[in-house]
Image (cartoon, rainbow, N blue to C red; front, side, top):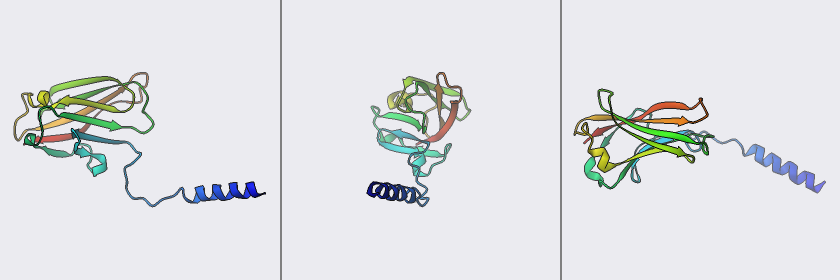
Length: 154
């Protein structure tokens, strides 16, 4: 009887504590970000929307830093995938693509800033698009390209 009462009370406590107020927190959901080193330029948890524009002030970074584009898709980790970072100019022309193969613990692609700033269309005032493609081998449900954001070069 005592064991049943403990199980019932434990179950009731779990049941009652399973609801929470909506805090608009983006934890544990599909999220994304564009960052340089440890500094986020755009991120879903910063309330940015995909396609937003951030100012990229190249004087604030070292050429040895790395630009990362990342997506976190709930329930998709641990599956082989090819992730491609595509950088497009204002005319929607591809100016650089970087392919990262066989990531299993997240979907990210990166480019060294030294390679990034060497691009022909990398001029002050230009706006470039940062696209990320995730291609899960053996899973046609996830093969998509999204515009994570735009960077206005300063």
